[in-house]
Image (cartoon, rainbow, N blue to C red; front, side, top):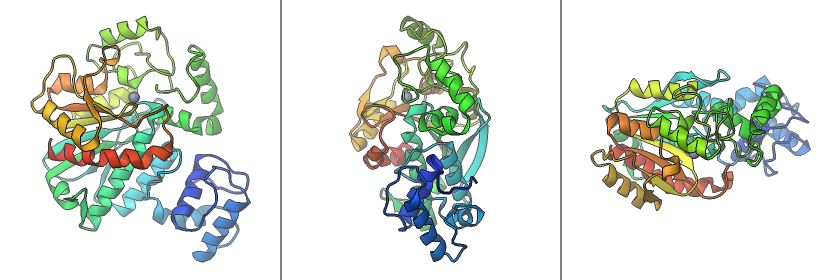
Length: 375
Ligand SMILES: [Zn+2]
């Protein structure tokens, strides 16, 4: 782990500040800047845990902090570095979770899947296929933390015994399909790999009206991963080309062919290896649940959608024609004729401010539990 000290900046510093705050040591700002106040907080933490008081977060201090790695922060930018920390924390705190690698991003990052449960019924939730929608990763990770804690304590979540869920279902979660894109949006790319940042900036120059990097949804090569699936891909291509998205860009470029981007290929293959009876694909924008693809009417799909809508207050809608093709849930519905939903969590301009987190969580906890029960 990177050593943090006076002058350090970035998402890892935010994570440090947030964790120290959760533990009751920090009453200062969470700003990603390691200044005197952060140093004093680190000193207090070191004193409390009886380790060398040097105000520097090196191996020894990280080692102590690692006891809390399982706590998913809900007040900071969430890049692939913080996700990895949390997954390490899950591995030691929740050994009953099964983590596996389903593939790699364009820049070689692991695409992780986490499985909760040993039941016969398999369901699959995914998040952050769109980079600037990274708040959805926090949602699924916090949900997993709470679900796993309830399992550990033999208690309930949203009124349901976690152990019953564990026995009856196998819930698979891929919390970050597009880690390279997320890292670009949260600032990690600029900080750690400036050459890749410059490359992305260059791609974004094709579309000067889209804010950079905040408007970035695509993978790091400028391919929109949610336009990569073999479900009327040619129609998606026609629509997007007509809208002007004819080359790599921050969003809406369908790529040279379906499943060209390896992140899309990874969840495609992962899906084929399983027998999911229901999938949720998490996005942001609009507090809406999209349930349809073309004229497919999977059994119970509408009824389940209605219940998910009731429990969240989100609208149940048909996907607008302009974005109605080549998405992951489109392909899932086409291929299996089973219920698949795009959940558009939250409201406002992407990336949604993390301050919306609690309200998003509260509206989605019912969806996350019910989708297992109704699958
Ligand atoms: Zn999206």
